[in-house]
Length: 184
Image 1 (cartoon, rainbow, N blue to C red):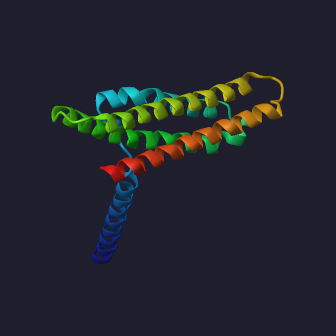
Image 2 (image 1 turned 120 degrees about the vertical axis):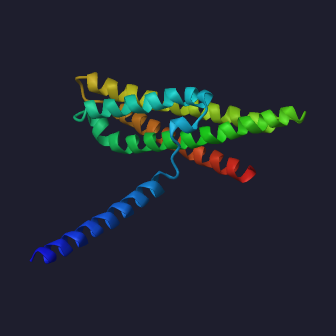
Image 3 (image 1 turned 30 degrees about the horizontal axis):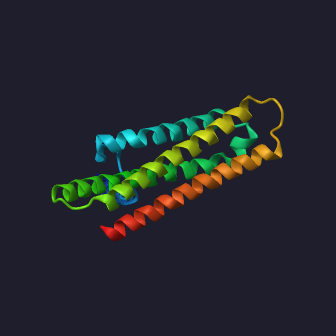
């Protein structure tokens, strides 16, 4: 009886180890595309910090106002888009770090670093655009939460436009990342 219990316990422990290992591998494979802030240079962390703060602020406004129509209608979609935009921006910043190093090497070799510098400026501009879009979404939802009247159709269209703009910015991040990866 004791030996049977021990063998069942051994099988359970072995099964738990296999499941745990599988879950760990799955977690690692999902995280593969994300860039942790510690992997970025201090300059890149400083550039992306306003976007990170804007996304966190947006998420807290959505969470704090679950009964606001704008938060109900656009909250989850906009949150996913904002979070995905932040992840794409993090990947862009990692690429930006590589471009900065490339530009420095080109300058050291007395070659023209204009192309990498133009791309760096484009990345910086897109990061700022994304930050403004998320800030505007946060402002609109905060305004809707403080209004006692029902938001007008124009306000809802404004929110839809802002979410679309954020999605377009996220898509442009993808395109820039693809072009950077093709050239490097």
